[in-house]
Amino acid sequence: MPATPPTAANPAPPAGPALPPSADAAPTPQALGQLLRAALPDKHRQTAQGWFGDTDFLLTRAHVDDDGDTYHDGLFLTVWGHWDFWIADARRPTHASLLQAAAARARHWLRRESPPPVGFTQLCRPHRPGIDANAVPWQPFDVATQAGPPEAVAACLLAWQGLLDYWRKGVAQRRAHYPLRERLLACWPPERIEALALLPAFSPAEPGTPLAPGLGGWQTLAAVSTRAPAPCGPGRNAPSSFAGAAVRLAWPRMPHTAAAAPEGSEEDDTLATYQIEVQRDPLRPGETGLEVSYAQRLGDTREPLPPEAADHTERLLRLLDAAQAQLTAHCDPAGDAPDAFGWIDAIAEHPPHAPDEAVIPPLWMALSHTWQSASRTHAARQRRGADATANANAHANAHTHEAGNAPAATASPSPSPSPSPSPSPSPSPSPSPSPSSHSPDPRALHAARVLRLAREISRRHHAAAAERFHRRFAFVPGLQADRARTNGLRVGPVGWLPDGSVAACVGGEGGRWLRLDRSRLSCVPLPADEAPGPANGPAARVEGLLVEGDAQGVLWGRDAAAGRVLWRHPVGTTPVTGVALSPDGRSVLVGTAGGELVMLRKAGGGDPFGTGDSRYVEGWRGVFWEGEEGVIWW
Picture (cartoon, rainbow, N blue to C red):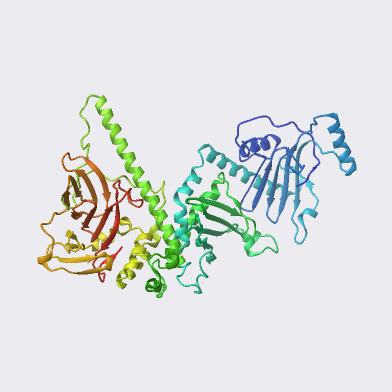
């Protein structure tokens, strides 16, 4: 960039709205001023840079930086491998005193420099193979009058128009509070990035396989590279923290102009990259963020992606969706190596109090970290939606009262005791977030994989592994809804046995009674004469508490005397077909038509992975599906 380009004087551009000039305008002092005001609305910001296609730009406001270098209101454009352009509007320098003006003249005299000219300047210089661009002299040209090399005029006009289009879209994003950026962050939260990076194609269970060297390293499939989250190591404040995952996407910057690439350029020079990286604070495990960066060439240093870069953000959204489709098509999400579960048998070698990090392989720990984080986020979102719905209903009722009409019906929900699939008079669950505002559930990428791990633990009847598995992977009814609806074996009635184990009738009418002992992962037939007493069906009562299940798989707790609803607790997606309460009311046993037997235990607070508002947490779950060897313990 020339420090003192020669030019003729021109008046300063008048003040105007913070919008770039029209796309067909040629560079003028007024157009440059409008562009600077659009790109630099904050007076404390002096520069703005970025790139699009093969053109990168640097916009500067007149100022003197910390190193003493003087900048004019100017624009530096580079059309990669072809041209550099310098367009500036240099104003007459002002000095605070006569002494400062004399010092400036003396500095120019000592350095044998001419005083900087004043006015509007347009300079260009070509890129020549094998010659440093800084060694090529600048030459004047004018786009408006088409004075100068015709190739330079045409290239500058094209780059200028592309820059105006870039900032018109950027200003529109700024005025709308960056909706594309918000969409990117909503559709691709940290948990989804981590789930993508942990797909089996990139993270085999055993190191040394051809597909991956292990956690923490970059792995590439075609134009998609991922870095799985890696453990940071135990610490006093972060006993199980993980370095964030990252996804890097390469794409051809010149898909249709490869022939126009500069002579001697390498293939990597025609590829641009985006990278989206999860940032986790090891001292604050619950706080995560995303760092989005980009580079014009693979070898360039990545810079943060500006929120005004509308075209880049749209392209990044498309590339991320395509990357997920490519990766999921390339690998079977449940396709871990045959020996990927050998660590389950080795758990017996560890003491019961050993931390999970010492027992469970890093890959599964990383996946658990992502799974549980997504579970908490999803549950909190659902609870907020339910609270918003309840508040809206209360507001509507209050408004009806003020209008002098009868209050709205169903002030307290009334669950249907019938397990039939007909609609229940209980309040409808909170609406699911729309696809445009929230991302798909990232746990769906690994649902089959985690289910296979549950099968392997259940097949081995390894109670210690099942306990750790339950702690590390919360059950997600929505991910197994189709399987529960089509293959679930009805569970109910249910009840307790004198020895503390539980009993459940599995298979509906004419089904068999089973005795289940979670402490040993035992499930054996129970003689009919040992079955629990009279079946309660989908409701149970003890010490003033009435617990009922409805056809949507939701438990409702209410005051048995007043009928007032105390809490709600979703347990599945199919009708509740059996409920039994412990004598003290602190445990609830639930069976569903989808083949689920769920044990809930009362705790000091709510379940962080549950979407209800009760104080019960899930103690364990047994799943009975057609086609399975036996019960799947969760």
